[in-house]
Image 1 (tube, rainbow, N blue to C red):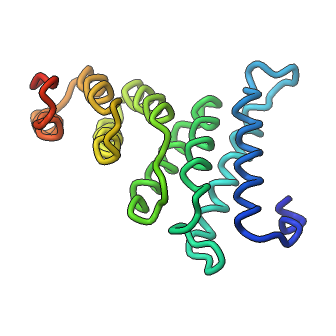
Image 2 (spheres, rainbow, N blue to C red):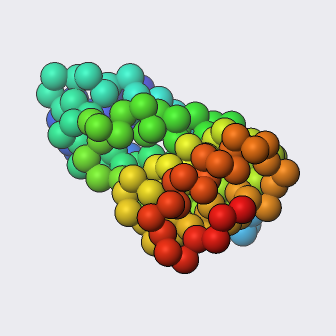
Length: 177
């Protein structure tokens, strides 16, 4: 599709096609495929779709601000990347979303953020974990507290502990750590 320049279709249709491709990858995980070694290809396709979105975020025909498919595309791309062991690329997409959250119509999927926080805890990437928890709070996600508690299972510095406690200061169910 890239080589054919998307058949010279409009940007909205390109993003709709990208969404369909990612849904196909998500619904047919590489590890359950009858074919071998698809994980790397799935990850490559997902990452390329994200990079296309990133490269065109300021496109005058469909800027990020008006791209209603963007949050879904990034959620699906992150999910496929995490499924296929590409944590750093998924983290890069999250960083892009964090940087552009004021422009992004919609928000990332809670489930993919929970999966990302699990990887963050596994890899002990505390700063990324704080950013995810803060993002979840900013979108009023019901999963924010659970992710904060999951992050709190790591050995945290006093500053990080205080930051987490401040983030949840208004949450009556949060017990200071």
